[in-house]
Length: 166
Image 1 (spheres, rainbow, N blue to C red):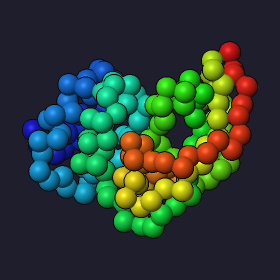
Image 2: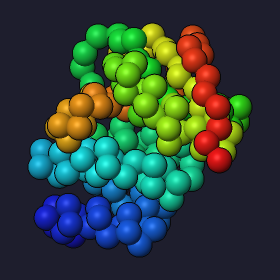
Image 3: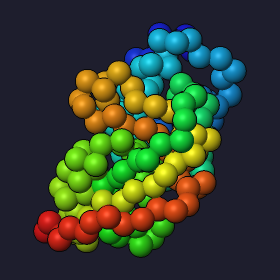
Image 4: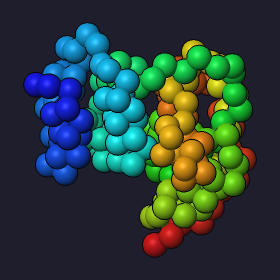
């Protein structure tokens, strides 16, 4: 499959619920050109929650993200996340974090508080825990979304808690 076909395929894979079936195909590739990496990064920014749900295995997902996203090469960062209480209790914290407390609060008190309530959490993330920095699309949205390997994180603290949105 050509790289151009792969780029066009990201949307259809997501739409057709095929990410779980396609992970190994992408992991077998040795090299991705910059435009393909950028397109996947944008797709992750836009549809990461769908990709995660479809793969349904965070260790495989993290392997894919480490393989396909541009490598983070910065310093340790204080990052925030708006998380769902139910996912927090199940130790299924999401992989998308931000430097913006305001953005994390928006997700924690909004979309991620549906049914069980939400949290604003904070972590001093070591550089090696961060898979990728923000995509151009994430910067455009003002979200400053970093992708974090949550299997490695520690020292996460709850800053605020929000009532459920039913």
